[in-house]
Amino acid sequence: MAIDQPPVAAAASFEALYRASADAVYAYTASLLRDRSAAEEVTATAFERAFRKSRSFDPKRGSQRAWLFGIARNAALDELRRRKRAATLTDEAAADEPVAEFEAEAAERRATVRAALAQLDPHDRDLIALKFHAGLGNSEIAAVLGISASNAGTRVHRALNRLREACHAPS
Amino acid sequence: MRRRETTLDPVVAAELDALEAALADDPAAEPELTELVREVRAEAPTMAPEFRAQLDERVQSGFARAPRARRGLSLPSFSRRSLLPALGVAGCLLAALVAVLVASGGSGDDGGSAGGVASQAQPAERRAGGAGESAGDSAAAGGGAEPAPTAKSLAPSAPGRRVERTTRLELTTTDVQRVADGVVRATQTSGGFVQLSQVRTGDGNGSATFVLRVPTAKLDDALAALSKLGHVRALEQSADDITGAYDSASARLQEARAERRGLLRALARATTGQEISSLRARIADNRRELQRRQREFNAVRSRANLATIQVDVVGRARKDAAAPDGGSWTPGDALRDAVRVLEVSAGVAVIALAVLVPLTLLGLAARFAAGAWRRRRREAAMSA
Image (cartoon, rainbow over all chains, first blue to last red; front, side, top):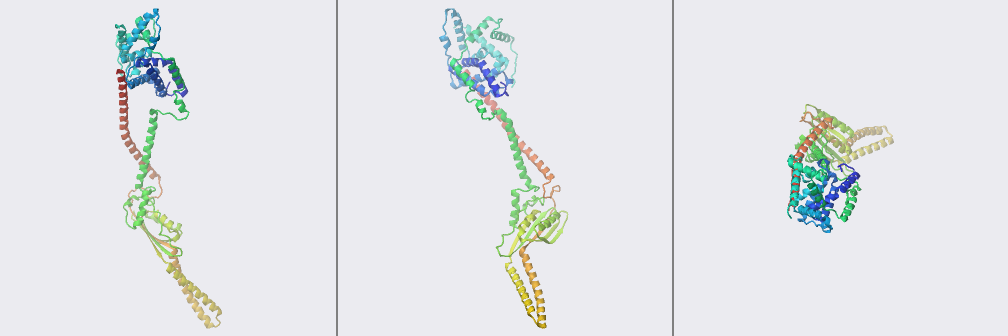
C-alpha cells in the first residue's frame, strides 16, 4: 500500500493487510487491554484509522505491518488512558474448554503460562504480544515503540526471561 | 530521525536467535523455547465470530464514511503535508500582490506615469485656491505626465444672455517649447486661434505667454487639453455678462441698416438732381456709420462667442535629468517601475520570511513537544 497507489489498488492492498493481520491485531490489543470487548472496539478503531490514514504510510519508515501495529498500540493506549482501567481478561476459552484426562498435563502448562502472562509487567506483556502474537521482528517492534532495533532486542530478551521466570516460579 | 544503534550483547543476540528459531518452528530450536512459544501462542485471544463478521463487513464497506464515497464528489483529499506547497505558493502570490500595490502607490510620487486618484485631487485644490505655488509642485517632474485637471468653465449662462468668458491658466514645465507647441495644437483643435504669443526658451528657465481665443462652446475642452500640457499652477476664470452691450450694438446696427434702406428708397423716388446729390451724400455717411456699427457689433459678438484664454508657461529646471518629461510611458519608465517592483517584492519577501521563519520554527517545536507529550501520556497509561 504505497502512498501513490490508485484508490482501487490501495483498497485491495488494505484488504490484504486486514486479512493477514486481523487476528494478530486482535490478539495483541486483547493482551494489552485484557478486555475482550475493549479489544474488539480498539481493533475496529485501529483498522478504521489505518484505512483512513493509508495515504500517510511511508514504506521508508518501516513495514506496513509495523505501521499497523503502531496504530493499534496507540489506539489501545488511548483506550487504556480513557478508561483508566485494566480489566481482567475474561478467560472464556479456558472456562468453556473441556479438559480431557489425557490433556490434563497440557492444560496445566497452559494455565501456568496464562498465569505467568498475567503476572508480567504491562510493558513486558506488550513486547511478548508483539513478538509472539503479532510475529514482528525486532526492527518492526522498534518501529512500533519508537526505539532502536538493538534496544528493542534487549527489551524483548528481558521480557522473555521474565516470562520464563514467571513460568518456573512456584504458583 | 535516525536512532542510535548499539550492538547487542553476544549472549542476548544468541538467545534472541534461539527465540527466532522457536518462533519459526525450526526443528533445531530449543525444545523448551519451542514449547513456550507454542503455549503462549495458544493463549492468544481469538476474535468472536460475530465480531469478525461485523468487522469484515465494515472493512468491505470502507468503514461507512469511507473516502471512496467522498471521492464520488470528485473533491481531492489533501493531507496537511500536501497543502504546504500550495500554502507557500499562495503566500508568494499574496506577497507579490502586496508588492505591486505598494509599488504602484509609491510611483505616484515620481510623476512619471499616470497619476492616481490622490494626485488628481491636487490640481483641483489649486484651481480653487487660485494662484500660488503648491507644496506638491515638486512631485510633477514630467510636464505632460502630470495629472491634468479636467478644467471646466464657470456655470453656463442663462439662455438668451451673452457672457464674456476670460480664463488665465498658468502652467509650469521643464520643456517650455514642447508645451508651447501643445498650446497651439490644442487651440487649433478646439477651433480657436492664437491672438498673441510670446515664447522665450532657455535652459530650464524659459517662459511663454499666449492669448488664445476659442469658441465659448469649446472652452471646457480647450482648458482640459491645455491643462494636460504641464503642471497647472494656477487657473483663474471670470464671466462678464455683456447682454446689454450686445443688444445695444445689435440695435444700433439694425437702426443704421433701416436708415440705409430708407435712404435707398428715397433715392429711388428722387426726381431732382439736388435731391439725388443730397441723398447720395447721406447714403455715403450712412455706409460709414453702418460699417462702424457693424465693427462694434462684431466686437461685442466676438467677446460673447469667443472666450479668451491667457496661458502663461513657466519653465523650471529638471530635478532628475534622466527623467523623461514626455507625456508617454516610455520603456525607461517601465524599467524603473520594474526595478521598483522587484525592490519592493524583495522587501516584502524579507519581511514575510522574518515573520514566517520564527513562526514555522515555533510551530515545529510545538508539534514536536505535543507529539512527545502525547507519547508520554500514552506510555503512562500503560504503566498505570
